Amino acid sequence: MKEDEIRIRTATVADTSTILHHRRSMFRDMGEGTTDELDRMAAMTEPWLAQALSDNSYRGWLAEDNHGRVVGGGGVLLCPWPASPKDPLLRRAIILNVYTEPPFRHRGIARRLMKTILEWLKEQAFVSVFLHASDEGRALYGQLGFKATNEMRLRFGAGE
Image (cartoon, rainbow, N blue to C red; front, side, top):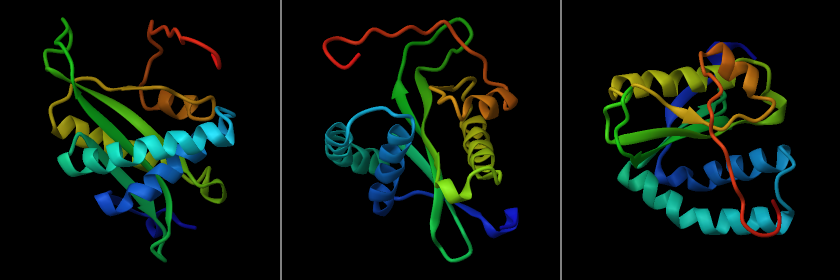
């Protein structure tokens, strides 16, 4: 498949189930969560995602092949956040749900999605963006200029 056979488009509320499929598949592929946990995550996220797509607090992009089949996607969560010395905005952008269907991997689709997302963020005057990288995505993100940070995590209860 040639690069020009993939079209990147903005996601709509009608794409909620596709984005949830990507999110669920992303966690499954990383070995995160049981089938029941992934099902619960998707069920809990569905109404939130539909609302977030409606109010533009979540912006998504989907990659389609020349048959209109969605082969990948990614998005950005926009949320209120206090300003910091290097980032005076009162909002934060967090990239989520970057996923490419397995038969379409290593063809530059995730890179195109990320470049689309990053360009949109620059147009919106963001000065930084955050993401959590999977092992598979880490090299791409590094090539795009992302740097590791000092973020730490604490999980409460079982399933840490």
